[in-house]
Image (cartoon, rainbow, N blue to C red; front, side, top):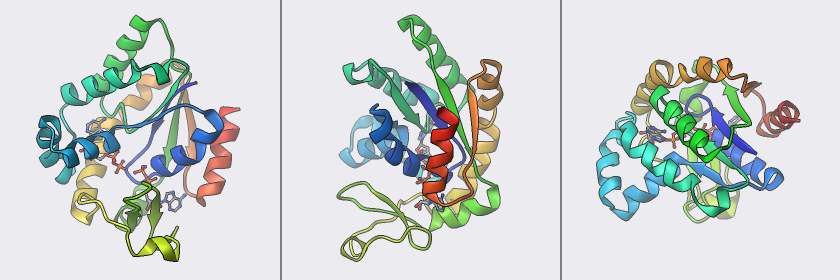
Length: 208
Ligand code: ADP
Ligand code: ADP
């Protein structure tokens, strides 16, 4: 299965991807995770991306497109992949489309997790992650277990200010990819405003 997870920052894309990969057995490709890894490793690309990310701006298309095209060409993506956080702009969607057409394969579904704007800031500012496992928690909605609580970290861009910037970018740059995929009949909408397990059940029903 070749699928895309799309939704505003904090919609629960990463949380749901972690719950879904066991079922669908495809690699989870998060451009946010890849860019953070490049930033941490101090690569040229990571250095270039850092300022954009910290301010809640999008990293330029040419950087992200190359990253994803190389990743989906790897052998573990032959039978499918779950893209999380890509495409995030119309040019990214078009570049992906061109690449898949060239490879003679098609997307199966674009899963759109919908969450109202007024819930986003609380979700983002309370987000924490376990640096050892990458697991995503929330101080209030999904607190880390006692043995993990002491080591969770907060992303640098999970401040209220950067979150508001990201939400604006989401509406101006990312939301326009929805009609693009709607034209291709690929969109499945899922209401993400429920407990995480309930959202997973809704996704599985939408994909069945
Ligand atoms: P969130 O979990 O809030 O949706 P991500 O982890 O997906 O955020 O992305 C974090 C940051 O990485 C973004 O704010 C942006 O700067 C950069 N980024 C990730 N994916 C893309 C992309 N497809 N295009 C441009 N920038 C991206
Ligand atoms: P995204 O990848 O779309 O940016 P995340 O999966 O990182 O979103 O989730 C953002 C924050 O919201 C995290 O702290 C996560 O624990 C929390 N969260 C995810 N799904 C839900 C949900 N259904 N209800 C409440 N909080 C959630």
